[in-house]
Length: 526
Ligand code: GLN
Image (cartoon, rainbow, N blue to C red; front, side, top):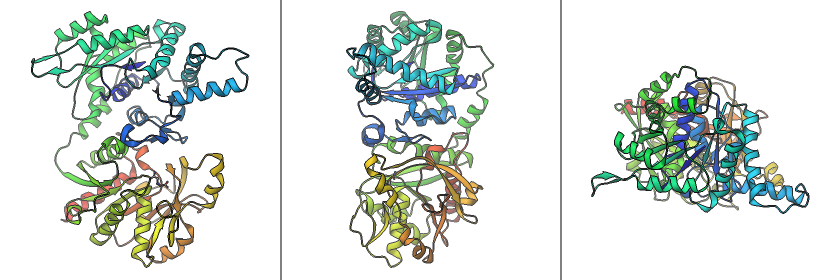
């Protein structure tokens, strides 16, 4: 169980994912759960400015971005049930109450809500048959919202036994420049707060700007009453992928294996160190411009950023990402400086004109361009406008568009009343031979994750193909357009799905890799 103290945004998710990676290196089968103590049922309705990217699982759940870290670090596909929210817990309990399942009992936070939380955790444990379930509690200890969850975890330790449940508290140790020293008091306070819930931490992971020394660790061990070997320091690092190596050098794996009495196997982080090394490349810089709407918060496009890094590392180059605000009219000279452009997904009209501008410019100047979801839709709109369909648009932005080249398909309109208006999760895609997509995937059928309402309008399919658009991927029944390309361009590809959710540090996504190759070629030709 991983809890957090002092402040948020100290990388608790990465720390939990790194612990998972270390345990996997011992051959231990691990799964992970993120608890988000907000009332939203899922992350789908949350503003990316506040919570960052919405990560989509194979089974189509819109989840917290930490699930993305878990999938990338653990190299597993998680199910939507691995994201537990207060909304899910309460709605399940209320549903049961309405059905009369509680047989006249007064339904309360303890035991009904806490029982529900424990049941959800145990269900994932049973379903996955994992040896270890990592549970990260979002927010910081002391938040009103997280109290029922901490209480449930406390009960779980009692029910499952001390040897089967371990608590790791992640805190922050600030360095006061004026005083010239690190301060342990916030860590002491947050540990005290945690103890107030009945939970004694077994390990404290201290995040800090700079490395802390042994004397300080001893002080924390003494005041927080944990083993000296269980006070771990994780100072800021260059790349998040280094964290498992840092934690392992402090014997985190050994301590946990010993504490929860798992049969020890020989740890092997060799492959992971190799990945970290390949990500360290500093020469051969490739610059990619991302034209997006939420550029002030990089976390809003975290999976795209990581996918670009994975692809660059596999090709032996370093990627520099520049974020371009889509709402500013795009400065064409600026676009010229990039080796490639990327238009990510999004919702709503804000920033569309900048994205369309970038599409046109990349066509005219032959700059490699990659459109994802909304990005692909912008590519289709602009291509149509450039080929005689003035007023082409998506009905998301103009319901009465003269040429609604992107629209809601009739089938989707029908299901509106059932609540499922979005196409979510994994769907198969048939890939046409002799295309960029097929060249990249080297497969005839692939499976990719979706999160969108609007689709390429089939009424415009034949005519746009006639004008030079290539449909290189469709649903297996040929009904939905999944990938578009254009010929006579070094690299122009848009996909309706989100390939970024499936890229892994040890296995870059084929489309991202193909895109990065095109960027390298562009740079070389300059
Ligand atoms: N807003 C578009 C749609 O709903 C694109 C969604 C996305 O980019 N994820 O179809």
